[in-house]
Image (cartoon, rainbow, N blue to C red; front, side, top):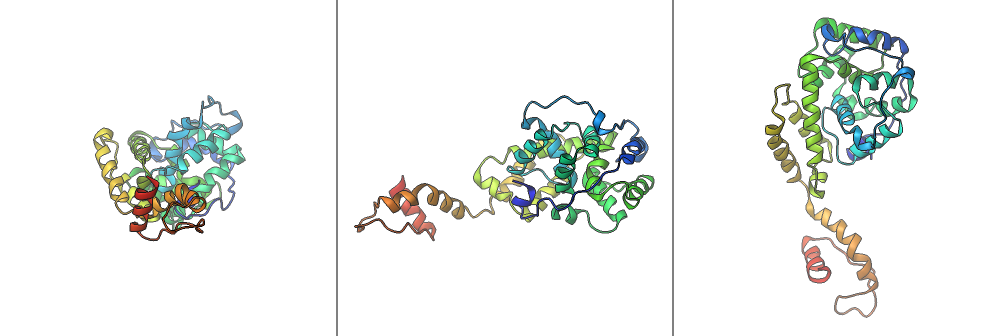
Length: 297
């Protein structure tokens, strides 16, 4: 399941090339243009990283990608899906190495471009290049870019050295000090949010664009000084609000259809039937209550 599936967004749209030249210039600029020299670029073929043990080991990096491109936590279906794709690609679990890995691995480019070219990401990061870079900074770091940093990224994008699809994850990789701490905090809150989607109602509540916008607004309140444990109450209340909008009747109807209708159609238990009915029709909550409680329980 992709983000496109859950939120009715499209799947992979384009393949984007990320030039080797950018890997050589990455060390000079990042989310914090003046302090990003800690990034040491490598060509992807030479990147060394320990193989992850299982798809679950990619939870942190996948959540970072969700935060970078969508500004929100992963949904409960999208997280394991992309964890598996990252594992199958033998991707690094470090965001800086991931950017370099993207440079030389077509499978990784396809995965990241799924995010970068998606309608949801395009909606977040629309407009001209300067507006595009500013929106990424606001989404990731809760601030506007400094003039030199914005100029650097605009030049890379407009000069064809970096695609828009690669921009968010690359700017995230260049973050340092306060910006990096903000991303780390947002990532942990995102992990906690997805972990708390532990019932069908909660999962369904986080299932459309309005819910995505609510979760995005929640993450905008996370900073480098946020107490993650204390913030869990906000996560819980946000999910409860989303879940309260779910039509639970439709969920129960699907359960009844899967577990009861087939049996009742073959072995009628309702009085008055002399032959199996075509099926049990459930259109109201009263019908569900009767069939489920009186006949299926």
